[in-house]
Image 1 (cartoon, rainbow, N blue to C red):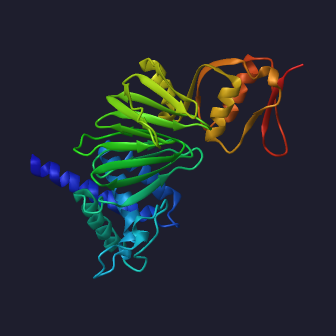
Image 2 (cartoon, rainbow, N blue to C red; image 1 turned 180 degrees about the horizontal axis):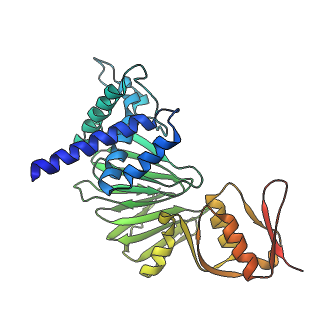
Length: 330
């Protein structure tokens, strides 16, 4: 039984490596990408294997930074890199797959995790799952970026912009998220972090987290339990208990949705604009405080606009710039 499971895992890893290579080709056809999505959707095991293979493929370019006889690797090895580059462009796909598998093995054993850093990012309207070498998971929301560094016995992730859900695998090393002048530590916990214009929010879904502001002065470490959101910024911090339903609504983006439950029209518009290049604007301040409830696809702003205009005395007009403007009827 164990041998069969091992063979299956090897087959999944080999297939994941092949997909990583095929999808790295700019000329990759749409039907190939569709076939890949169908393959990946079959199981979490396939999804996780592909994310590892994809991360390994991104690192192959950095392997050239190692120089024989040099005590220290080239600094470029640790430079953040968001897009894979084709290192072995003259070799066959099977050679490329072998290279990916080899690098995957190195990453899995921790050889390259001492001080290396890797950046992962999403575009507007995009979501991405990243499975780290220790099986921790990061789900990136729209227009977000993280930099992962394993160093000095610490698993560290810096949220540069946007929003992400972190699921930390149990490990002897602490799992640390750095976001907006704060250090957030957990081990085995699950939490989301969102950066706003001024404040940041940490919501603990499972386990617990310790939040400590960076900088000088005495530490003001706060323990945040499951079912709690902590909002912090230049003016201080506050904790707010949340129900399971409230947390799930806040994480509806994982299903590509926006769940509204009493938010104002101005808040809802700002939320939709995070996910879409086609923007919505409130042209009439008198409608900004209208309250809404509903479940919408995050990348379908017109469905949201239609619901608003059918529910309230609001009209929508589209300008030559493509912006949809909302104003009161009359």
